[in-house]
Length: 90
Image (cartoon, rainbow, N blue to C red; front, top):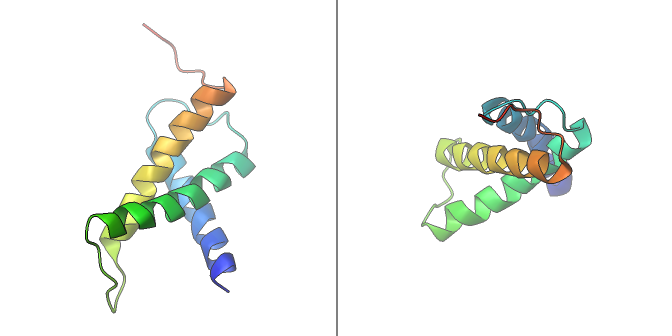
């Protein structure tokens, strides 16, 4: 069940990360966005835990914000690596 939860969270976090990423990142495929979201969830959880984050009884908003920021960074990296970044350079 945890794998399905991570995949569902990865889809949502990936789309939020793509929305939050600076520039035009709409040219990466949806499957890559989902992978960035799953990576954001997993890496964000490790970063949150490394800096002393603890499990709470309710929704842990800080952990999810960290996951979204990590997913946004991964989307920028994926867009740069795949060469599909269409942002104009000055």
